[in-house]
Image 1 (cartoon, rainbow, N blue to C red):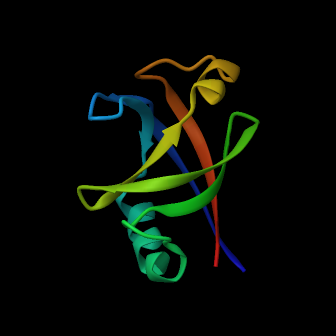
Image 2: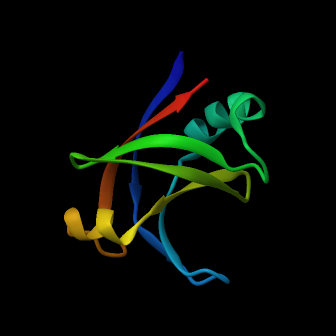
Length: 97
C-alpha cells in the first residue's frame, strides 16, 4: 500500500549548513504526509519517497521544515531536467506504507 501525491512547486535554493535545491511540498499535501509520517519515518522526521519529475524518477527523503516538507533535488535530477532556481515543476510522490 502507498500514498500517491501530485503537486506543482517551484525550485528553491537553501543555503543552510548543507546547501541544496528543493521543491517545497504544498500545505495540503504536507498534511497528508504528516498523517502517515509515524508509520514511515526512519528518524528526525525525514520521510523516504519515490519521486517523479518531468519523466525522471528517483528516490530520496523529504525533510520537515516549518510544518511542511521539502523535496531535495540532486544535481543529476536538475541537470537531466535542465532546472534552475525559480522553475515551476510538476511532482509525483509515492510513499510506501
